[in-house]
Amino acid sequence: MDPKKEKTLVIIKPDGIQRSLVGEIIKRYESSGLKLVAMKLVIPTAELVRKHYTVDPEWPMKTGTKTIESYKKKGKIPPSEDPIKVTDVILANLLKYITSGPVVAMIWQGMNAVGVVRKVTGGTEPLTSDVGTIRGDLTIDSYEMADTDGRAVRNLIHASGSAEEAEKEIPVWFTPQEILDYRLVGEAILYDVNLDGILE
Image 1: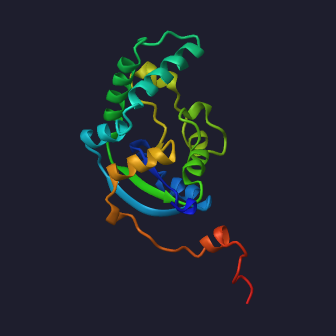
Image 2 (image 1 turned 135 degrees about the vertical axis):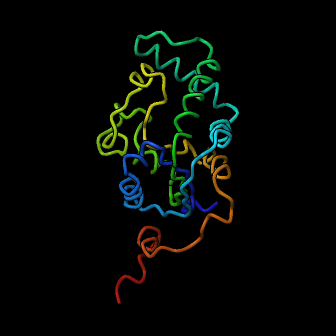
């Protein structure tokens, strides 16, 4: 695949919609130089959300292990030492969160799309996300508060973790017909080797 056409999935979660941050979030990705090639507003079903989070068969083990390690790193006792049990709780909370209202699902395309989106979005936990990122600037939630409340962390956005993950996630949300192929004038500035055609 042409590296300049790398695609990644971004979902603005219900908290982003309810806080009227859709325009601000899209602007941040557009400003980075990425191209929006698909977008829809949907209320996800539990089946769709479950399919999305389990599209990677290793997700339950990786997520549970990472969560247990995070608890221990902070000197706290994890809810279980079994990664699958931990992930079951996380998935139940995610299902409740993501199906609670409309979301905006998008596909962004461009060179290093996955990495650029993750950089602009910030870390998974808003509290520890860098200033200048979407999560760092636009929300205040933390893992500790989410755990205290028994809910998923409200971090505005889902962004694919890798190009391979994006390839698996995109078909869960979009058909090939919904992904547009078109040219933006700005792409010539980003990708044209010699910047031909700028001067008359």
